[in-house]
View 1 (spheres, one colour):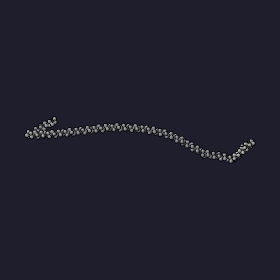
View 2: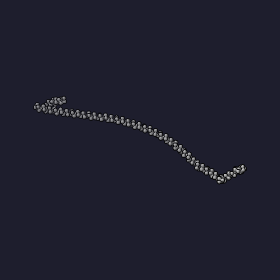
View 3: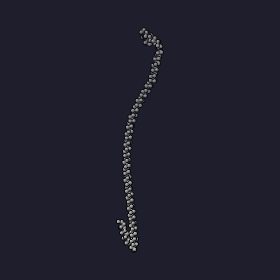
View 4: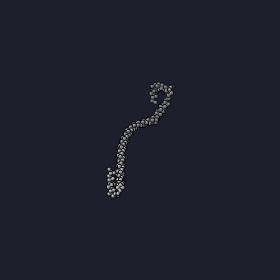
Length: 183
């Protein structure tokens, strides 16, 4: 509006040439201005309702990705720490297991030694009882043998001599026979 009077004063040739060029290309002034207004309105609407929300979504996404990367790093660190603890626990458990095995072996050896000593002691006890029983049986058998030999000597002497022996004679002959048997 202000431009038209200024251009009219300059001879109108510029305005005329612009109008002619616009008509040659099919440009209509009021239509052009309405299209510019429509374009600016669409740009503003897109900026307000499409572009900014998309940028906000992209920014949120970028932040979530950054947080995810940070969490991944934390998880890596925690995993490395857990693996270290796991290795330490496993090493400790292996050490304790080896210690228990060694203690069990030592205990088993001591128990075996104790059992062996007990078995030896029991065997010696049985042998001693057997010897004692044999000694008692031998003494009993010798006493019985002495009595039998004394009886046979008294009977034989009585038959050979043809007389009846007194109790003193029988005792004396029994003692002599017992001394000869014992020797």
